[in-house]
Image (cartoon, rainbow, N blue to C red; front, side):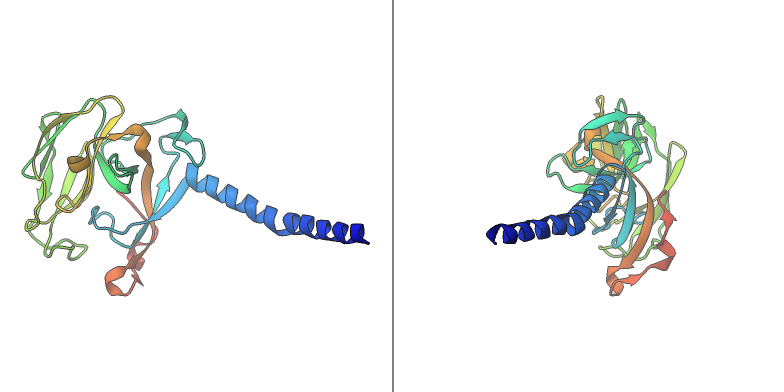
Length: 234
């Protein structure tokens, strides 16, 4: 009798494992591996990349853009490309480990500096057209911003400046060693980036941001910004 009860209990446990636990575990592992090594999506909580990326955007990250890593780790399996100037990437801050979205402005071998918010790469002034009108994406966290367009190696992208905010608008030349990258936010006066925490190692760059999957406006009770759904990141 006892053996029969034990057999029934064992069969129930095995059936529960096969019917529920194992399928769910497989789905979790497969989905987790996909998000870890292939593609992921992240919500953006801050405005450091305004006007390119806004608070409330959900961005899509291509983790195969530069190579393949062992799932759930930062260990590389193979690299087939490297981040280029102008790429918008997900990286980890070297001082805090915080996950950030920034734009690559300097690659290994470059000398990067800034004078009065004018970016210089290899002693060459990066073209930036700035206007005094309000940014097309509306007011930022510090009032009326100034919008502009920066041309980085033929890659044009929007930038934003906040003249009334204390910020590091100038810094001495920094020469990047192998595997070092200089990253900055497009919201130049409201971004914690390589000006503050230094260069980012190649292994700290997770992947390239290539699209906005959706967007909810936190200033309007999280109403959808329909015009931003499925839009590319430039």
